[in-house]
Amino acid sequence: MIRRKSLPLQRQCNFFAMEQIIGRQKEMAELWRCYNSARSEFVIVYGRRRIGKTFLVNRTFGGRMDLYFTGSHKSSEHRQLELFARLLSDGLGFKPSLANWYDAFDALQAMLERQDKKKRKLIFFDEMPWIDTYKSDFVAALEDFWNMWAAQRDDICLVACGSSTSWMVDKLVKNQGGLHNRITSRIYLRPFCLAETEQYLQAIGCCWDRYTTLQCYMAMGGVPFYLSLIDPTKSLPQNIDSLFFSRDGKLYGEFDELYDVLFHQADGYKQVARLLSAHREGLTRQEILNKAGISGGQLTTMLDNLEQSDFIISYQQFGNKKKGKIYRLSDFYSLFYFRFIENKGTKESHYWEKAMLTPAVTAWQGLTFELVCLTHLGQIKQRLGLSVIATTASSWRSSGIFQTDNGNEGQRQAQIDLVIARADRIINICEIKFSTSEYVITRDYETRLRQRMAIFASETKTRHTLVPTFVTTYGLLPGTHSSMVQQQVVMDDLFVQ
Image 1 (cartoon, one colour):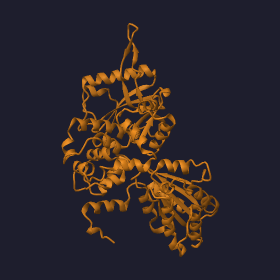
Image 2 (cartoon, one colour):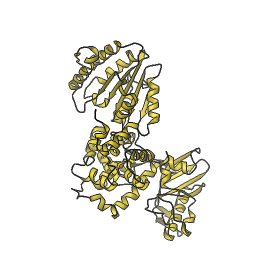
Image 3 (cartoon, helix red, strand yellow):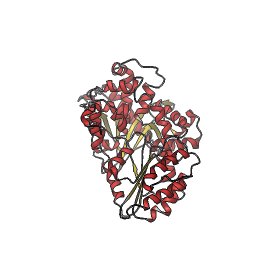
Image 4 (cartoon, rainbow, N blue to C red):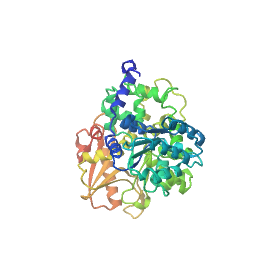
């Protein structure tokens, strides 16, 4: 066993963070509930790659597993069965001959029946989508194993885990065959929120303020594996240079592997993600269809799978449901990759340290902060006192056409990224601004805000009260033109868990 004191500082700190596990308390409690249940339980744990699914199960159950089998990526069915047979040999006392997955589950059943009848049997299939190879009978055999044997008992806890969210949903959750409605518990792991990210960084020894933590989140999101790569002895720019822009950077080549593992025919998914990254304000499904040239049915599947994997978010357009949802790319790593890595050639050393104050990075920070806010809508509502009030969040775009005084049509452009409509007939019109200090509202900007709200009121014909609301890093600098703002949310409010 490696002693902790022999590890380098970065690995020591990251080891301690993994030891104590950040967040995931509800998920751990649910796993224990299923383990201690009086009936057999079929549990699925799913979520995007690198999110900590395997770690969660291992950290929760430790050495209690009676079978722990991990699918082998891109291996044949014969190879998968060979690995499974080796795993069963210890429990059976011999290596079984497995011609197919029906044989495999029969052997598993035989192994488990040899064990103490009073003992809870815990089975963990990790990366189950990888086990289901082309023309495999794995799912059908799993159906028979569960329905004809495991579900008839009260001592089985089967945990299935997988990064391919689309496979987990299609083959297990939405299964229309023998596994229909057989899943007894679904645990979906999402990326860390800002509060959990802050806790993790503190646990590994990063003495960063919230502004720096926010910048880190913009590049990596709340993906635990990415955060585990951070060296606490280096600054954030140094870490980004090392991880993203050096030739051997661990996140430099992550993009293709990430999409290829998660999605079948990944090139189409990359195309949709790339298109959305170029339209940060978002696109409707029809706009994506027009620009991507993908068939309607195929696009629907892609959008569903991307959203289920937390790569995109969708929200309705206020007051105009006919136009359909707006889709935005919400995976922070993908956005960072498209903006600064893809097709940019080899970077010079210390690239990010030198680029931090450039207009390109400043613009990226402003747009990405909007996304951070949209993915922390619960924290914004809590700060506004809306936790117990029914609300709907949406975006809004002007139709761009209005009637002038002489009866002619004119053109105007207006967009609001976040509209919070409340059951008390009040609408928060949210303006989101990233700034290194208190944000200053000038006379011209105040005029534009008032015009935008007037256009919104005119086009939506709403009779609800409009409340100008600002979401900023450090708040607004008090002044004559900031008096129109009635409610504020600052960066610290986004760190509430």
